[in-house]
Amino acid sequence: MNFEKYPFERLNELLADVVPNEKYELSALTIGEPKFETPGFIQKTLKETTSSLKKYPASAGLPELKQAMVNFVKERFDVEIKQSEVIPTFGTREALFNFPQFALFDKKNPVMAFTNPFYQIYEGAAIASRAEVIHIDLTKENDFKANLSDEELKRCDLVILNFPNNPTSAEMTKEELGVWVKKALEFDFILINDECYSEIYFDEDDKPASLLEASIAVGNTSFKNILVMNSISKRSSAPGLRSGFVAGDEEILKAYMKYRTYVGCASPVPLQITAAVAWNNKEHVDEFRAVYKENFELAKEILGINPPKATFYIWLEVKDELEFTKELYRQKHIKVLPGSFLGRNGIGKGYVRIALVENAQKTKEVLTRLKDFIDGQK
Image (cartoon, rainbow, N blue to C red; front, side):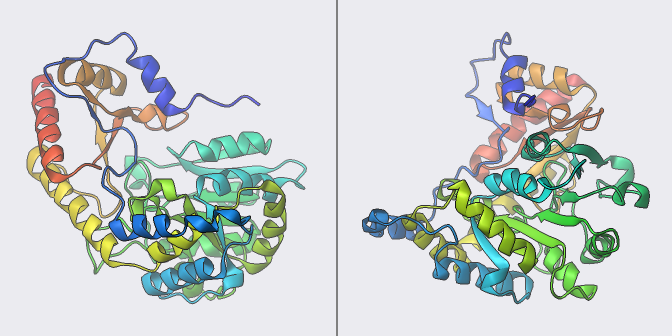
């Protein structure tokens, strides 16, 4: 299989011969990993459940974990799902990689579409599935929103959207997602929305919509052909807990569950028990959200950008993203990720992705350094 190099490997190669300014401490704004302590109640639960390591974890997930995920969907999106409509996963990365292989296995000439730029697991899954890829290009001209022609959609077996979007921070409304639901039914393809940034938003009156909400809104109450994936990693600053889920079409999930019994990716029992506690708690998420909001208020003040409605990314437009990245590292000891490393066919060129995942004090310092660099480029 001819997998592309991961973006961070390409970044290391790009910066290999660049000598950074040691006057400054390294600030890495490249990876979407929260830099906050996992909440104490989550850590406490994990420590108290280690005795359950003596048990093999069930592939289907503990009933209390599934119920916590059902509760989350109800509390957050006001959507009622059954336990048979959700499967706990070992984070979402493994499901995003192996679900396409499951779904496309019986297709003679599979076709898979996904948003571009993208989380590279989508492309890896397409390669592993021997699928032809149709890129759903997200550009400034289309407000970074997903659209494909009917001719392209007729050919698709599987489509992966990602809203709120990594790396552009774009959102799609419930009505816009509803159009996609209708197309999935009309042309009979499986539609997934990767919703792992759904909880990093800044306006309680304008929360990101779920594809599940959109499905119900257009009358698809059984979620036929519709799936969402979500994760606790960003929501709870607990990426090491490896707790995610896939929810939606019960018939698809029933077959996928059978497949998963062979994959061997069940989460250890202590992690499942702990994840259930985390999914059931909302207060700690509100606290993290307040920090991210403060970071973007600083970004608006210092950089003059319009803060996004969701995610913790700045999709910053620059002249030459490769030279910008190298010179920023050389002069200010700051790492950012070139947008072209996240896209194909020229998409992402002229942008860098900046992840604001530190506390406000560190964020203010590094954004001031970044502003000094940008001013020096003019």
